[in-house]
Length: 266
Ligand code: BTN
Image (tube, rainbow, N blue to C red; front, side):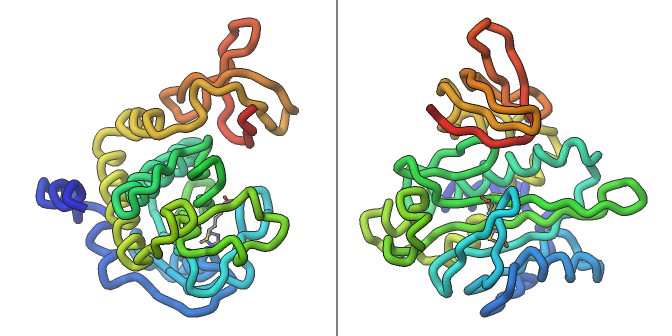
């Protein structure tokens, strides 16, 4: 946390959404999905940085219409309202930014060696520890607000996972040798890191996020199978483009890019 404190006193804090989040975290017990709660608040005009955190989600959702397992008191299930002045086409950069922020917070607070799998899954020990879901709302053809949903498996045991997720999901408790995570401390660090990276992004653009993402990636240099709306193919992941697309080198040597989709590491 020292690093974070130094940056705060260094003046990067409380410029944009920062001023709104302390004291504006809605902490709820059981909700269907924090995404829905944050959307209701966003529609009511709350300032960006407003966060909703819940102990349990009965209808937590993930990317590609999947369910997100969110048992009571075991994880960090949080959604944050953002109001970026961006064209819709650039919002994938925010998902990469969120991955960087959360990965940094996890490493700092827990010491677990988490890494980012493109686009924004966090893995530890080869299994998923955190998922990020960015949902955008449009108004009059432009971006109205985004909801950044973050699910961190903090204190789940192997038994807390349903059969179909065993071997795929893991938690900070499991990867950290059985030491329980202070969820509030981690949630706070996540918000601080988001604030830091979002402020930096607004000031300097995507480049710092891109560099940090590449340094934290477990995808780059790996042979991957890519699943996009255009079909499935295999290639080597080599970097991010200046817009945030994943750059892939095909067997022919040709470089291709993908903006959204899913990969499997081979
Ligand atoms: C994924 O990896 O598929 C994304 C998972 C995102 C889960 C979080 S938990 C908080 C927020 N509320 C939800 O319903 N989903 C996101």
